[in-house]
Length: 527
Image (cartoon, rainbow, N blue to C red):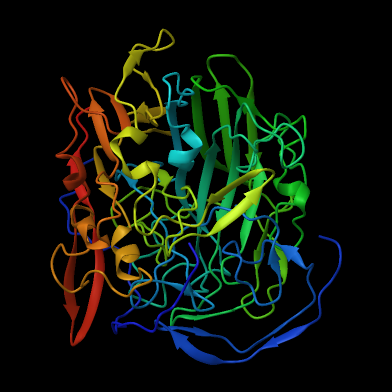
């Protein structure tokens, strides 16, 4: 969500990531060159003095659409939520955070940080009258992972597949890190999520998947390049493993994002799919196999496939192969600049869709004949934040007795399986977390909660947004070895007390500097 800074209270803080103490168990036309001058800081995020070369007028130099030299190539590119030195992150003065309920999987076993497999049942289309389509509840369900990027915040060398790297955000020696989001897009009327069967205004009927890699062109001190703050590499998973167009931020075209090419791998709602990723000598390998109908798609994040990292000073791209950052999924192995404590994780990026209701958070776009508010639902009054937005109807599938096909809910096998040396192992701990505290802090009317007071910026205090709050926040549930997201409760289901399952934001201190930390809630995975 883009929201201009209101100049509200700024907390002095150091750049840190989540810190927990836990007992460990096993376009074609070119623009003009520009020089970006130094400017005053925005919530502690300053602008570098840089010399930026020529780039296409549209592209992927900043997935938030706030580049000072380039417009975003399409209005619906999904970004990770960065965390600024004072909590909320501003991109060229705009707040760009959004709602990302996340489940992270934790293990000390070698290979758990770079070799994993998931099973998931794709949400089926609603059958009841007035049912909410999946694309309105979540713009993407994605699987996350930390990868190395020597040119990303904090601009230091990263050693592939190694726990020698650190990423807590407390040291300038932390490894340069980027975030992988393997994003599953649901069908939508105008195909605005990228799965259209033809031109950009044509409806889609299938799911598709994209490998999305976000970097951050900032220093440890919080100085960012305003021309390419959050560059993104983007490639659909294809049946032949070849990108349909250049995936890099510098060379991407509209064809990179329009999904009308026959090689893009597609699946039907309700299908059971197997997803896995692991490292190779050429880069991170991702594959999705449709266990219901057959077929698969894959992609390698390699220099040979056109992936690039970005120069902090010039925004120029260099062919680059992205590899997993860590060997294990230990609790401290996270991305130093991300709002979430990202390791191997499953995320439901919700709150990106609501009717244009003349609220202060409207960010309306029109795709074909369809107009909607796409940015972020900062007052939490859209369909994802009402109980009617999520189905509670459960029906067992015949494909796998351990999975369920939950209408309008994102189900999956409870946690991934890691493969290393021919041995499969699960993840003994999982964490539920959300970055909602930053959203509440940066709401356009000013801070709606105090980050320095225990629990004030937590999910169960959404009443701060006033009477427009829909009254519900989706949560994670488990039954045996099945995981679900939405509004699933009842006999046999553990809903972890609903929204209280996310844990709370907690204040702490380092000397005289106040620090904001996301403390998710940790649970033992008994599956």
